[in-house]
Amino acid sequence: QVQLVESGGGLVQAGGSLRLSCAASGVIFSRIDMGWYRQAPGKQRDLVASITARGFTNYADSVKGRFTISRDYAKNTVYLQMNSLKPEDTAVYYCNILRSNYWGQGTQVTVSS
Image (cartoon, rainbow, N blue to C red; front, side, top):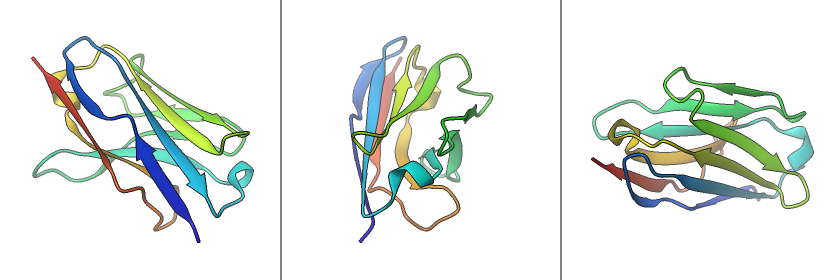
């Protein structure tokens, strides 16, 4: 069965960095497009960054230049490196197999001012 397990969230001060990880199992990792979404309280879940099976990336305007999505095919893992964090980046972050209903459990990221 398909599983996505996230890790790496936490509390950080504004300007700091975090790296999120999403380990995938039960899928042919090299064939799937992956994304990171986030959802703040009272707001909709938005796509933050995506990476295709071949490694092409795309970012929301709000995180361009600060976040980097990458993938390790040997570890079946997708990463989200988040730098220069802002309080408005506070949210629960979810990884997703794009165009599917497979989601991770979510990991909380809190940025204090």
